[in-house]
Amino acid sequence: MRLTTEHEAFRSTVRSLVDKEINPHVDQWERDGAFPAHELFARLAEFGLLGLEYDPAYGGEGADHLFTLVACEEFGRIGAAGIAMAIGVQTNMATPSLHRFGSEELKQRFLVPAIAGTAVTAIAVTEPDAGSDVSALRTRAVRDGDDWVINGRKLYITNGAQADWLCLLARTSDEGGYRGMSQIIVPTTTPGFSVARTLDKLGNRSSDTTELVFDDVRVPVENTIGTIGNGFAQQMSQFVIERMSASYTIAAQCRHALERTAQYLGQRQVFGEPLAAKQYVAFRLAELSAQVDLLASHNLQCAEALMAGEDVTRMATVAKLTAGRLAREVADACLQFHGGIGYMEENWTARFFRDMRLSSIGAGADEVMLKVLARLDGYPV
Image (cartoon, rainbow, N blue to C red; front, side):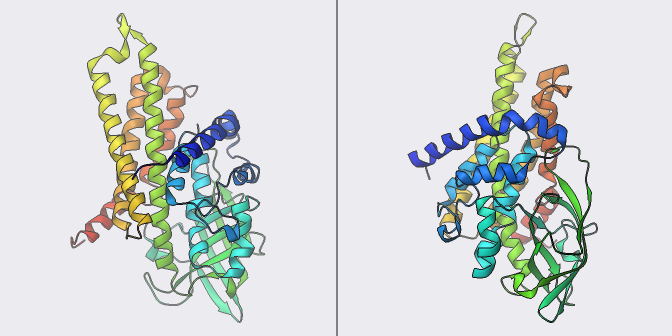
């Protein structure tokens, strides 16, 4: 599948937006430990970037999935990965289930402002004792008449400090394991909800990440997305979109980092010649560039399969695993080839190295991706 001239024109628009309205501010946002999500998202919404594939009835663009791929790739050129991740939460992690399974009323109340950029969203799944093992989830929503009464904690929640509403996964029955969970929209103004703390992270520092507390939080049962008790299956579908979009972004982040490194090595003189002329350096950069090409090709194939209505669970898992590992290799090589300056916080390589480490942890750790693949391939694990 080839991108059309329309897709490429869209790419130019997004790249210009990133270069002119985001990148000039990322250093300050990194120092602040947060970025102004409501302000930035409202600006992104003006370009239709928060609802590319969503129904125009709710403010979406009704575009094909390749526009999402292009947008994710261009967000990969943002100078701080935390910004791209936060945008991804809004567009590809917290809202897909609502658009696909939500009632008309829920879409009007919560999806419309999310697409318009007037509401910031977050996905609340991970807990202190339930990260990749979603079956261990403990946060409970007990029915009391027409309301859910929610108690529990969520951890490592991106956008948690600024979110206006959450897509919460909670237990809504006494069935154990993967059964009896539901996705519930929780406005953050609801009494009993609080942000316990904002976490101090190794990387992605411009994106706020929080621990959330639910203490007898009461929301209407009608805030349930889709079918009560079907939350796990719905969340797994949402995870597939999350992993695909993460791989799209990571491939672009790697490509951009290699391009910047090649430019530097062409100028850096060592022993009377450019460092790029050293065979090992040239070969290693060429090797990594080839691996990025393979990931990008897989991403495109994955996008094409999704658009054809195929089950892309395995392809998305392969993409996420490959992207996470490749990002770590690229970040390490770029820092190494910059030498001492690469280790300094004043150089982009230090931030990139820190930011990329999350790629093998977030949205499903490498080990979990391997377990998923093994099961899909019929191995008894």
